[in-house]
Every structure is written in structure tokens, then in C-alpha cells.
Amino acid sequence: MPRLPEADAAIARISALADAPAFAAALAAEPHAPAGPVETLVPVLGDQLSLNLPSLAAADRERSVVLMAEVMREASYVGHHKQKIAFIFSAMRHFAIALRKAGWRVDYITLENPDNTGSLAGEVQRAAARHGCGRVLATKPGEWRVLEDMSGWGALTGCEAVLLEDTRFLCPLDEFAAWAEGRKQLRMEYFYREMRRKTGLLMEGDEPAGGRWNFDAENRKPAEGSLFLPRPFRAVPDAVTKEVLALVGDRFAQNFGRLEGFAYGVTAQDAQAALEWFLREALLCFGDYQDAMLKGEAWLYHSVLSPYLNTGLLDPLEVCRRVEAEWRAGRVPLNSAEGYIRQIIGWREYVRGLYWLKMPGYTEENALAAHRPLPAFYWTGETDMLCLREAITQTRDTAYAHHIQRLMVTGNFAMLAGINPREVHEWYLAVYIDAFEWVEAPNTIGMSQFADGGLLGSKPYAAGGNYINRMSDYCGSCRYDVKQRTGRDACPLNALYWDFLVRNGEKLRGNPRLAQVFRTYGKMAEEAKRDLHRQASAFLKAL
Ligand code: FAD
Ligand code: DLZ
Ligand code: SF4
View 1 (cartoon, rainbow, N blue to C red):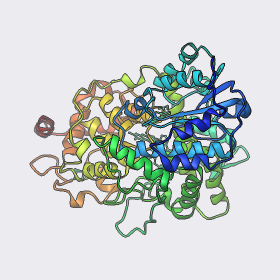
View 2: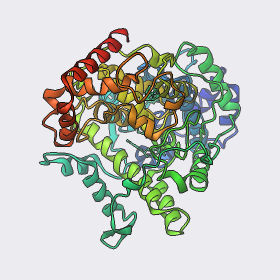
View 3: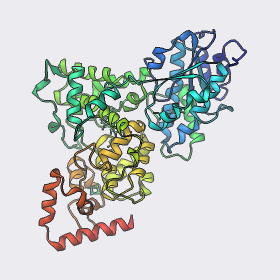
View 4: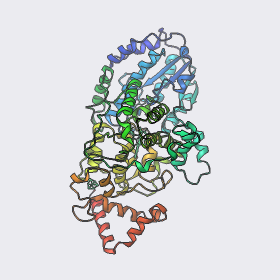
């Protein structure tokens, strides 16, 4: 294949970054990259920002070019929150600078590059021709959609294409498949124990530290208004990030979400600072208040590390080892350390394994046959239900909500109201800074909507207003009365809860974990049952 006649193709690309002068200057300030012939193209995606990426580890730095491309297809396959696009683009640009610092040749295509084809495949094809490569070496992506695309890169470029397994996870996909093989039920708890044994995290010999695998029962303290809350970690946007913010403000003005106040870290150093902040300020109370919700408080004691973990700026095992060390040093209690480590080596790995086991098809599942469209207020926050308004406006402002808000507020409402899970899935994939399909889809389709019929969880996470009242301070300021089931002022979740169970009675009645609630319903007077149904129907009709 013909090579670019000029000496250093990477330098040529830097001069083409006219739309991003601060970024171009930062790249050019790094030592000159190798200038010899290029054999291998190493495409690096927006969530593969790790210097230990398998394809980087396997490539010969002297004979390779790293390709990074901001492309419209990735930026618009769902209507991403503005802060999510800004985070990915800025983190990509900073990673390109880091690669160059580490001596790599980097070919970076900005969104505004006049020759940008708009797709990853188009940019890989152009770059392979531009550099005259014989080989494309990539790390497998986090989404089925992109893997399908990647599988065609060899034919598209005429190069040998090598796709490596992503080793930034603790459980290789074949190991997960072997674990799942032949099991009637997949349950996170058993998988988690395997991961504890495998990593040795919180183990005393063969036994779990503290004599128990799981301290969740101690992690359900409701929020109290008097809690002392740490200020969240905030990074100050530098010139490169400011250029990206201007670009996103201009090109994605119609997308959901506010860009103002963007304070996410965009480098591995920022991510490390966010981890240090969490260990110092929030881990101590993480366990106790993991499920709590407070008005006007987005972060509570959560780590807000998911954006960094999911893009490769932080390593999951390193995070867990640091958390364990805090417990071993006596600075945090076991319920906090165990609760946190379980989320990462348990849930995070488990949902990834499940995604790849069940794709394609998993994102189309709809076991409860829910077909109602997503209410418009999911995009505006304009609803009298204070719990939903809080979660949605906070999501609009920060691209973040913590787990219980996602599961028990927006997720619970969508399931009770019978919203089409595909629409719910696309909403979550769009609005959260940490959303990539491998982690988002099992959480939404499986955990929050029960649309996989119980593959991921043993029962639907369904709740009426009582749960939200117990775990938050929302209900006291709500226009609805959480204690009432029917009538004009009744909390809508109460009637919706019973209506959901009855509506799906055929599918749910046999579930032993729901036996008690069905018994309670069975004991209600017929008139009360009719009233609940009327109340729910009227609400859903007006939705
Ligand atoms: P913390 O509460 O501090 O938890 C620590 C870490 O544990 C997180 O950073 C995350 O890496 C991991 N973790 C915790 N719970 C889960 C879980 N259920 N699955 C996987 N990892 C977990 N998480 C995402 O990373 N991306 C998503 O797109 C996403 N979508 C979700 C959609 C729904 C409907 C639900 C119910 C949950 C979703 N989650 C998702 C899981 C969880 O809500 C987020 O990981 C968490 O809120 C991120 O905030 P944090 O870093 O402050 O988490
Ligand atoms: C999320 C995202 C966005 C918004 N933009 C890009 C992009 O322009 N270029 C890129 O390489 N990656 C981007 N990403 C991340 C990809 O969507 C992600 O790599 C795939 O979803 C695979 O997980
Ligand atoms: Fe939400 Fe009902 Fe409480 Fe209002 S009363 S905040 S709708 S749970």
C-alpha cells in the first residue's frame, strides 16, 4: 500500500488539528515519535484509554501508529448526554497526549477534521491506506455492535486483522462462560465468591474476612438530613477540555443535559486523584449509606469512579486493593470495604460476563411484555413525583445518579408503569457518563426491568412509595402523600406497585420470593383491589 510521502505522518496530522489549537500544541510539545516505516495500525477506542491495553502491549512501538478518531456514529448511536461526549472526547485527547509522551506515533482525527468519514470503520480504512499498514491490531470492544463492525476491518482494509481479548477485567469471558455452563440459575453471589478466592481480596486463608462473604444487611441505613457530606471530587477543565466543551456546546446543542459545571477528570492522574479523594473522604461511610437518598445531594458517599473504570483510566483490581488496604489499616469498617469490593469484582464482572453470554438478543428482551412509551418527563424532569424529579434533574445537570436512584427511582417507576424496556435501555445508555452497553444493558434490561425474566436477578426490584420514604427524605416535600394508596393525593407508586404485580401475576405468582406479597394482596377486600386498579389505570392513562 502507498505510504504518505512526507516523513512523519503523525506530525502531518498534528498540523491538521486547526480546529483544536490547544490540543495540537500539547501534542506537538511531546517528544518526536519514531519516523520509520509503519507496519501496524493500532486503533484505540474512546473507552480503551489505558497504556496497558493488550493491543498496545502487543504492538511494536517503532513500527506502529495508534489511531484515535472522534466519529459521529459513536457520538450519536444514542443521544448521549453532553457531558458524556465531552468526557470521552477530552479523555481521548488527553490519552493521545499521554501516548505521545510515552513515545508512540499517534494519528488523531478530531470530529471537525474535514476528511472525517464519521465512522470507526471509515477512519480505520483511511488510516490503513494513509500509513501503508499491513496489519490492524485492536483490543476487542465493550459492545456487541462495535465487535460486529470490527470483525469486518480485515476485509475492509486488506490488512491482516488481529483482535485481542480485553484483559482489563478480572474474569475472562471464557472463564465466565465455563462458570455459567450447566447452572440452572446464575447468581452474582456465587460468582462473587469465586472472584474473592481468585483475587484473594478480603480473604483470610480460605475463609472470607470477618467470617461472612457479604455484609449487605448492614448497608441499608437511610439518609438523615444532618449527615455530614463530603464535597465531591472536581477537576478543573484545562485548555484542551475547554476546546472540547466549546465543540460539544456547538455540535451537540440539542442533546440532553447541561454542559455547565463539567468537572469530571479526563486523565489517569485525575482518575487517581478521584480515587484518593474517595478513599480519604467517602469510603468510611460508603457501606452504611450505600442505599440512601437525600434531596439536592447527588453524590453522598458514592465513589463516582465508574467513568474512570469504564474508560480505562483506572484499573479495577488496583482500586479494590487500595480499598482493602484501607480496611487492613483500620481506617474503614469491613462493611464498607466489602460492600465496595463486591460492586467491582462481583457486580461489574458479573454483568459483563452475562452481557457477552447473552448477546445478541439480550437488549431486545421483554419478558413482561411492557409496551408503553417512555414518558416525556424522563427528558425534562417535569413531574410532580419528587423522587423522579430529583433523579432526573440531577441526571440532566451531572450525567450521574447513584445506584439506588437508577434502580429504585427511575428504574422502578418504568417497570411498574410497564414502559418498553428497549426505550428504558436507550435512555440509560444515553444519559449517564459511565454508560457503555456491556454494563448498562444487564443492569437495565435484567436488574431494573426484569425484562430477561429473572436471568440476572431472582425477583423484580419493585417497590411502592414506602421504600423510597424509608431510604430518602424526598416524600416529606412531595406534592403526593406516600401513606395514601388511592385518591387524588396518593403517591402514584403505591397503586402502581400492586397493579404491576397483578398485571404480571401469571409470570410472577410462582416466584417464592414474591409469595408473601401475593398472599397480602389475596387478603385485601375486593373493593380495595378494585380501587387500586382504578387508581393505577387512571394514572397510566394520563401518563
Ligand atoms: P459506587 O456506588 O461508588 O460503586 C462502586 C463501583 O462499583 C462503581 O463505580 C461501578 O464500577 C461498580 N458497580 C456498582 N454497582 C454496579 C452494578 N450494578 N453493575 C456494574 N458495576 C457496578 N454502571 C455503569 O458503570 N454504567 C452504566 O451504564 C450503568 N447503568 C446502570 C443502569 C441501571 C438501571 C442500574 C440500576 C445500574 C446501572 N449501573 C451502571 C450500575 C451502578 O448504578 C453504577 O455503576 C454506579 O451508580 C456508578 O456510580 P459510582 O461510581 O459512584 O458507584
Ligand atoms: C461513547 C463514545 C463517543 C461518544 N464517541 C466516541 C468516538 O468518537 N470515538 C471512539 O473511538 N469512541 C467513542 N465512544 C466510545 C465508543 O462508543 C465505545 O468504544 C464503544 O461503545 C465500545 O464500547
Ligand atoms: Fe416519590 Fe411517592 Fe415519595 Fe412523592 S410520595 S417522593 S412520588 S415515593
